[in-house]
Image 1: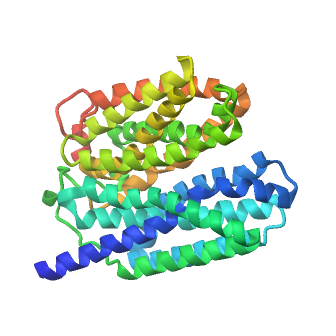
Image 2: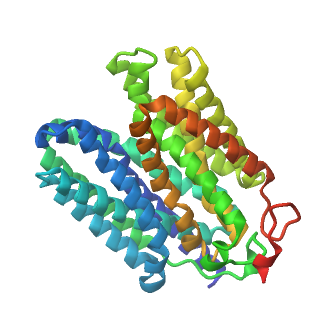
Length: 401
């Protein structure tokens, strides 16, 4: 491919990925719909909110298999299919008359569509820019985070002027058209020789799972997702229970988290092109540890509370931005969608584990304590972890055989 055409194609692919990611990020406005859906179905909000837990799990599972769809159908066709399925999921959600139907439509269908589009388009875009993987990840995943802010305004306006059912249909239509438009601009990234990547070898998924570094990266990722997703999910409740904020003031936590999350994606994503990515993850872990320690042990006032939330959200946003490039550093670019896909299961598993621990052991304090311990362990791992083939007690020379 000629240099001029190559650059034109990859920048169009980046723009299409940003548009697609913005639409996919709209699912993070789900909390706006818990109350209206609970009233409609005459069910507790906690039962309705479980839809988002299922969505996160389905998103992670879909991300882990997206590579197989891409190999068979190509990135453009799969993206178009994900856009249609996303629209159908939202439209069926509009007609949900029971919790089961809500969980299937809003949780499983929407989550699966979102996950298929999210990781595959991100990985494909990163492959187009091997010289600036961190910055490109920041642009794409930043668009995903920005989508939650943009659609918060869009969906709030739709709810204010239309019925709940019409809002879901319009949301689905807008998101579907954006994903389809973005998908039409994308092209498959060329396969690269191993010497063109930072990793010394392009690992297959089968090789990765036999490698201890792979599972240590997965453990760190799961911990980051558990801390970020759990705190995001209960932020308003923490403000009311621990800091004794009014519901209106506590609701500001949503905005603080969204801004900090986006800042983490942009700042740490760009920083990861200028220093070792594993050190960027270590930095994110330290920031998250500061936030969790404050939530557990400090005498919280409103300012300290919001700062603690911001630390956790900043770390979480930065971690999920840097990880695709980090995995490619360790295991190569060519199989990134598959290799990162299994690690990305930690996104859904982490969100579920946090909720289960809180339900079994009586609230968020015990969950925070568990997260704090896991963060400390993850920090030790990140400070000692070495890439396959490097000298160090975690290196595995046989992985190259």
